[in-house]
Length: 316
Image (tube, rainbow, N blue to C red; front, top):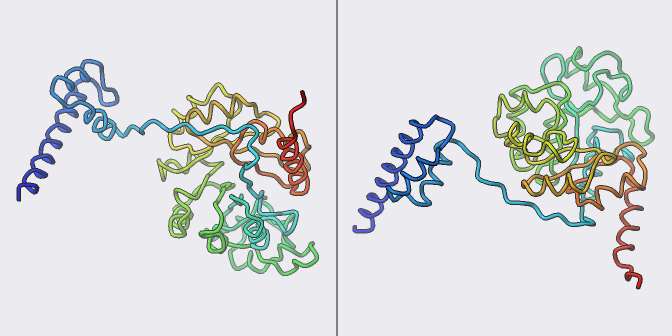
């Protein structure tokens, strides 16, 4: 009985203090807690409780914990660009399945919408390059898209369908994380699917159309592009829900990685196309968190060589 009364009293005191804090802050502007408010709160005996309640009252995010930077990062995570497109047609279920089999951490997929609003996997606005169809994705109904062959040009993959986003998420659920490239903006049904299959918010990074996404979901795990180390704080002010920064291997620097990690944000790096050994090495040397590539053979060669170098005894 005494414990119950004590808890009620404590809760009442906390509510009273929180109301006082809000009232004091309101006198100093809705978005800012001034030094005078801090002093008055301290005199009132709020102590550390004030800081917690003030952050909650104004929606401020707690400080991020810095991330470790390992150089070289020989355990760098891999992202399969449009699935493992060296093995299977891009943005198809076989390409995604191969990424899962090979232990990739992420698979990157591109999403567009059919004429009747169904989200499907397709990089280009046109159907010509990757299917036996023609015209724009947005001009076709889902039933028309489903009649196309996304593997007609690859031996062993003829008859491969263009998958819907839901089909891809069903395959990926609980097995691999999602790197989502929104080629044609955001629609509410897309967000519903991401939540239904457990990708939003913890198993997902989103690039492209992130400003539009944030209008629907202000806390969405977005990944803005990082050009150099300078604008890290500026980017986080603009995108406070960012969980990662995107970068290009040729532009990546050690400073960029350290600065992002200091602010608790991961660094993804693209080494796409044929790339080069130098381009592949940079993200690993500088301690990036995720590398995305097309050339699996070159990546495996580079990683094996760097692991061998790390084991070699230093010269006297």
